[in-house]
Image 1 (cartoon, rainbow, N blue to C red):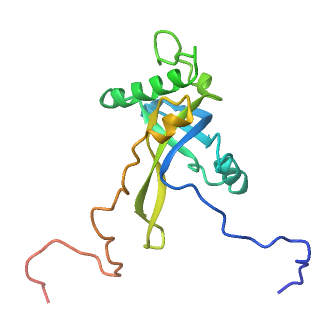
Image 2 (image 1 turned 180 degrees about the horizontal axis):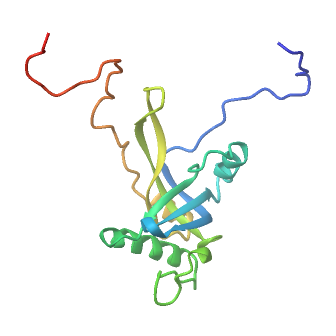
Image 3 (image 1 turned 45 degrees about the horizontal axis):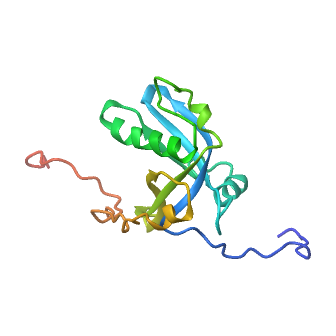
Length: 181
């Protein structure tokens, strides 16, 4: 190993992470993925103990493209949820209107706006096959005060429905009759 000087390097510590709950968040960026009909919304926690949490993660891990981001589809089947998002942002930022049509359809005007987000834990399988948990955005809500945060119902963890497939070097094939040897 090459020699390195660790004298002035601070030791890494386990950083505290946000938990499932309601947070006042600020929209950092919005990207319209028009061919797929959704907005990719990048956010950060705007106040409280975890203020700046996702900005710091993105700065330390620029290759984590979905860190502190989620999708709001505007496909016909998802318009009700998209309208809830528009209303929550509009009502959280007095006098601002985003209605994706009649008055303001410029998604870039969402940048810098605050909105309440409810985070929920979700199980998933990592690349290593291990079951893990992460925070996902469950819904947006109209945020104007700390009472709005406290009034939100926090959903229970979103569990996986089935176990991960066992790793195997064998491939299943359909029944093809008798083996010819």
